[in-house]
Length: 163
Image (tube, rainbow, N blue to C red; front, side, top):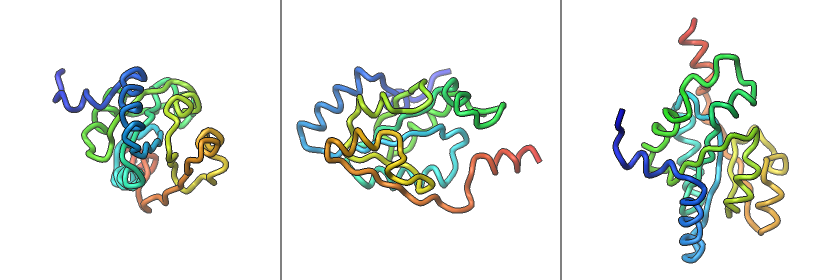
């Protein structure tokens, strides 16, 4: 199945991302990084990603592969949507500039690679407990938490659908 080329242009390799990051750093643009599974995209995800993008000039989204979602042990039937489907849906959001898949349990190595100016997670984390806090702090960057939009949860959606 073919999708619009603009959707594929945002799902990039680390090598292509490196080129983007070098150009951005040369122009003193702020690079923002966040990560997650984003299994069934809902308004809470969209709000979170838009807020994250507002913190800088370029939002890199580290997307868990199917294997890493299973490592997180969310539920035996997760992810509902495979990594390609999740990536393509996220690529349709204007606030997301680049999507890079990662297969490890945490995005630590990817954060080390990106070296973002701003690292973002939901406010269910304390900044100092966020994976990559040490990397971003050491280079003088900021670690920011964003409150969740109440009433939205992938787990709750799955429960509602399955009754």
